[in-house]
Length: 132
Image (tube, rainbow, N blue to C red; front, side):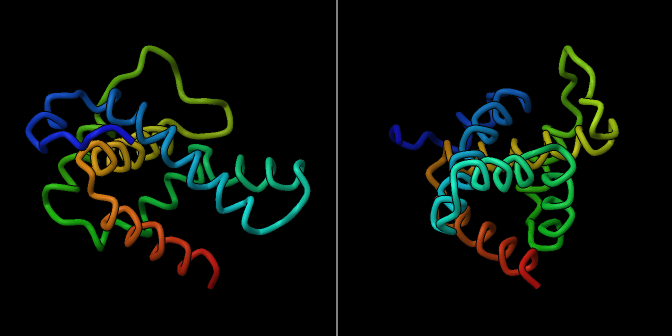
């Protein structure tokens, strides 16, 4: 990981830039989680892709929303309201795709600012809710 940047510097990135980083971070975390489950490679791939698609990330955001503070909700809004130059994938609605971009922006923001403890809290809570 690079040296964390200030919150002000992270806020200078637009929502899609934050989501670009957040997508990579979340994908890696989910791949590591799948690896810990000890299944075969195909099963790990299927499990990971089932967790990192727009529909699943939209659900994840819905689960986490009540835990987020105003600053985090603002980052989510910035990501959600960003306008990519392409349409949502066929597997997701436009609303789900926008929500997943907001989720990724939040992850990217926390990662860039070095808030790994907060990321871990969010991931742990999310995992506990998904397993129930």
